[in-house]
Image 1 (cartoon, rainbow, N blue to C red):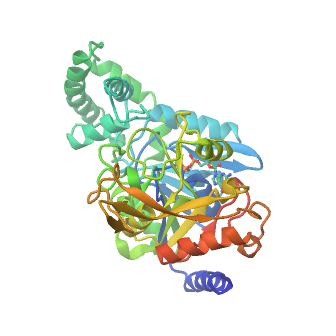
Image 2 (cartoon, rainbow, N blue to C red):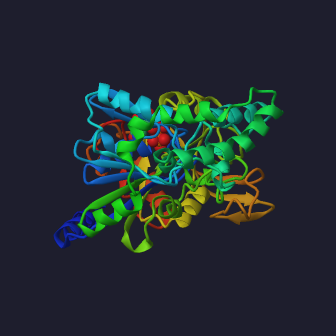
Image 3 (cartoon, rainbow, N blue to C red):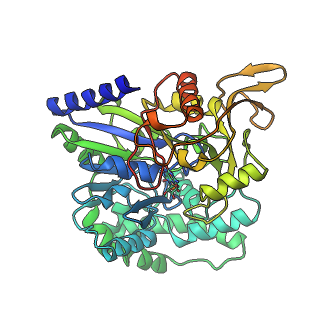
Length: 436
Ligand code: GDP
C-alpha cells in the first residue's frame, strides 16, 4: 500500500510542476447517495473550478464543515471553498426557485456567491408545472421520482420547446418559447383536470428570477477551456449514480440524464484529451432509493442496523434507503462504463463493529457464474449473489492509515482491489475527517 501512496504523491507533483491544466471527474458508481458531495468537497480545495453537468435539484449533496451541515441540490459543492468558482453546465436542468433558495442559504452562511457562480445559457429551466406533472405521473404509478420536475424538463428539451436560461435575456425569444412549451404542457395539465396556464404568468414567473440568473450567465464550455489553457484544474461533479443512468442503468428505474463519465463531456462541453482522472465513488455497502432490482438487498435486522448506523435517509426526499452488501459485479460494470481511474470508498466506518460483512463476488444464474454484468445482458431480478464473508470489522474510525485497520477489514479491502483489478485510491471513514 505504501508504494501506492508514494506513486500518487509523485504523480501529483509532476502534474503541478508541468503546470498542466486538466479536468477530473467525480461520479457515483452505485445508485446514488455514495457520498459524492463529501468527496467533491474534500477534493475541490485543489481545483479552481467545479462544474455540475447533469441532473438538477433531485440531487442532494451533503457536506459537514466543523460540525455544520450543508445540503446543496443545485449549486456545485465547490462553492463551500473560498476561491473556488462553480458552474452549472447545459446538461443540468435549472430550477430557479431552488437556485434562489440556495443562494440565500449560502449568503446567510457567510459564503460569497457573487462572481463565483456561472450558469450556461443553454441550460433548460424547470418550471413549477414540470414539478406538478412529475407528481401527477408519479401518482399514476411512477418509478419513485423525487418529484422535482426533472423528467418533464428534459422531455421538453428533447421535444425542442424548452425555455433555456439564455432566453430570459430576449423578451421575444422568451415569449416564443413559453408559447410553444405551454401549448404542449397545457394538454397534459388539461388531461389531469388541472388549471391551464397562460403565457404571461409563466413569463412573469421566470423573469422574477432574472436578477439572480442574468449576472451568472456564461458559456461553461468556454469557461472550462479557458481554465485548462491557463494551466488550471477543473473538477466535474456528478449527481445520482451509474446504475441510474438513462442508458446504462436498470431502465425504467433510472434518472433522466447521463450519470456516467461520458455525461460529463456532453453535459459540460469538453473533449476526452483534457481528462486526467475519473474518481468513482462507492459505499462500502450498497443503498438504493425507490423501486427496481437490487440483488444484494438485505431485508433483515442487519440491513436495518446498517441503514440506521449509516443514516440512510435521502437528502432530497427524506425517504428511507434500501440497503445491501457490496456488489462487485455491479461495481466492475460501473468502473468499466466510466473508465474509472480512482475508485473511492466511502462510509467504511458504518460497518465498524460487525462480526461478519459479506461481499458479493459474482452472480449465479441458471447454473452459470458471472463476475461482471451489464444490466442489458442479465436479469438483475433473477441473479443470485455468491458471497464471501469478512470480519470482524474493527479499528476503522480511529485509524490514521489503512495499516491500522483490523485484519478482517484489510482482507476485505485487499479482496475488493483484487476483484476490480485496481487499487482503491481513497477511503472515507467519517463525515468530516480526511480520506486515507
Ligand atoms: P451524494 O448524493 O453522493 O453526495 O451522497 P449524500 O450526500 O446524499 O449522502 C451521503 C451521506 O453520507 C451524507 O450525509 C454524508 O455526510 C455521509 N457520508 C459521506 N461519507 C461518509 C463516511 O465516510 N462516513 C459516514 N459515516 N458518513 C459519510
